[in-house]
Image 1 (cartoon, protein in one colour):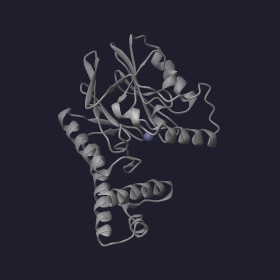
Image 2 (image 1 turned 60 degrees about the horizontal axis):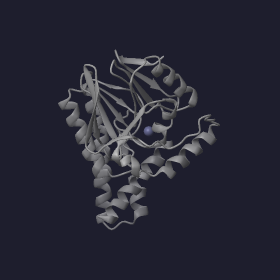
Image 3 (image 1 turned 135 degrees about the vertical axis):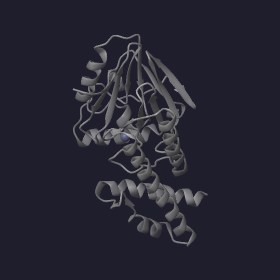
Length: 279
Ligand SMILES: [Zn+2]
């Protein structure tokens, strides 16, 4: 059974990467955000979604990473919603990663995955009307170029995609400067819409101002230290390899970054160095 976080909002969590799928069954519309991941899991979500008939049916993608888009084909007669930049993502890279994970874990998809073509896209913001509520979508680039935040003003909930997870430090695939601005945007939206819960793409829901502020500060701190330290070393004339060696020791939430997470951290370091080199 899904976790019911509000009378019309339900959260399903996949057994891989604790990936969250959201179902909203409102009188005006049926909405699913990032349906994922294994076919059996997505089928359960789709059955639940279909138990209420609605003329307005939407699938909203928080961004174009494969783990967030993989289940949409199970939701028939829906309109796909994403940011304008979704059209420019690196599809091949996403397809390669999906294939690799599916091969590794012997995942069989009876409906072969086809990359989605969203028909509702937007540049700055977008509104989807609901009975006694609405969803407000904002561009939130940084993790990828096409990330969005989704807000339910009446419930005080923000669906954050791959931001503000309790499991991950920032994974910056697009731009560190954009990522920092997006954390500022998140803080502003939390204030303006009186957000009391944040549902991240992966991990636990952040409930309450203290938890939300804590996550914002941890992610800001990581990015600030990463970029400023890299800049110092760069100005001192260190080579990229040397800078990477030093920055590998950076801590997140006062703990060293180790194991599988170290690979993601090294990717961030590579991006920061390339940003310094092209500046
Ligand atoms: Zn993700």
